[in-house]
Length: 473
Image (cartoon, rainbow, N blue to C red):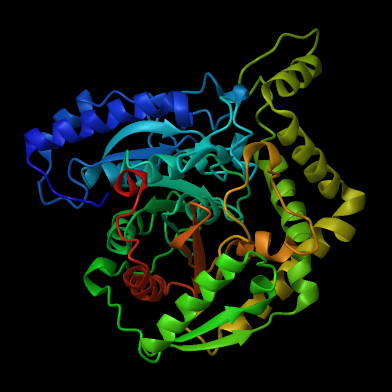
């Protein structure tokens, strides 16, 4: 499903059809936390120019995006009663562009997880095979795009939480440069790693969406002053002379022969288009350090960010004999066991006696990793590798992270884009065993146009533009 401009009558029909389809899919996919009343939004369209880039388009927001007057839970019981009094910056921008929010999508609780099995409302199912995971933490958003219900959805990406679900669901998942999109009004996970990202089914739509979302916001001091290009007008699939580095550390972890053949065939076709493709290798010790460094930094920052979820300052309150009891009871009943475990890890890393040995050491290794990535990318336009070592796992067999020696790098390497803040995008490339697979490309800071252009060439070679479950049927 692609972005299209419709008449007022067709807009209302399209929005209400999308809302109805989302409701009908709920039993099968369980991708929605809250449905949103669209009547007032449709009425507000009358004040907008019909040339607005997303005029009348039904969209979905991940449920950690603040929406004025609409419950925003981050898929956690502790925030079940939270109704923001303001819109996130991106919500303001999307409304000005004419988008109509039809639902708030499920996610791993507080963004912590990679399966979307950790949501308070239950696991989200993959539309290609409901016995398989959606991926996370932005699984609900990914599923609703992949199912053909909406053409666009917002996610957030702290480790690979947009890009991995995109690969598992056969759609495009875009994580721009750190600071390219304001995070004002986004319930955080880890502030130095969090990015706003999004899902589409075509490169052209992905380019246009970034024009809508990007730009400076004084309420987010990490947002960039850098001018926002007209990405969609400069999408060009001529990749002759473009230099692509294939990341050997990742590809050696891909064992499925059809996945390997799909990747090798894509490389061959890009070379036939004139691209220069080399195999490169990053430092093995640093690549194996990605997951532990991520766990330490992300969980420490999350522990600090969510210290206010205590039933007194914020969140659902459970009774107790004292203030301390209220806090303990509220957090014990309000937070899932997986999140509580991550807070224990984060708290341990932040103990004064542990900070130098654990947290600060992780920060130092992060800097070495980013320097290694910078040096690897220096002579290339993008780094490319398979977005996941397997198709979406079966729900009962899936785990939030792979720690096997064979897959640890291939399953967790996309955190490179979060450590560095570099732009990174997953693009579908075909199917294996009836399930979609994809590749990931990462470019230098603020080189999103490069991603779109190379992504367009890949899209043309794979024929996956506008592809979703509905189209496949």
